[in-house]
Image (cartoon, rainbow, N blue to C red):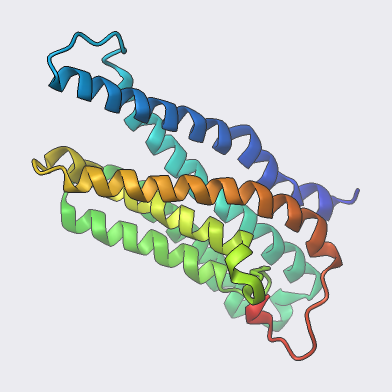
Length: 225
C-alpha cells in the first residue's frame, strides 16, 4: 500500500471511528428526548435522564461538525493526489489557490455559524458553508458517479452534509417555535439524513474497491464522474 492508498483511507476511517458512533448516540438521545417529552406532557414521571435533551443537542452539533470536516477530507484527497500527479500547480495555479482558499473559507463559515445567534447571519454562514462544500465538490478530480447518481456515494454524502449544516443553522428556531413546525421538520429531515448515512456505508465500501479500477465510458465528461 502506497502513501496515496493509505491517505485515501483517512476519510472512511474517520467515518467509521467517529461519525457513525455519533450518529448512533444522537439518534438514541433523540428518541429518549421525545419519549421523555411525551411522558411529561401526559403528566407521567419519566425515568429518562432530564439531560438527554441537552446531550442530544451537544452531540448533534459535534456530529454536524465532524460530517463537514470528514466530507472536506474526503474531497481533499483526490484533489491533492490527482493535482500532484497532473502537476496542477504549473497548469492551473489560479484554481489551486482558489480551491485552497475555499477550504479555509468553508471551515471559517462553519465556525462562525456556531458563534452567531441572529437569524440573518445564521442563514448567511450556513449558505456560505454549503456553497463552499458544493463548489469544492464540483472539481473535476472528484469521483461523483453522476451516471448512477441514485447510488452515488458523493451525492448521498453531500446531501447529508448539507442537511447537517441546515440542522445546525435552525437550532435556535426549533426552541423558539411555539407551533413546533421546525421541530417536526428537523425530525423528518434528519430521519432522511440517517437513511443517507446508512446508504453511505454501502456506497463507500463499494467505491473503495471500484474507484481505482474505474474507466469512464467513452466520451463521458469529467464532470459526470
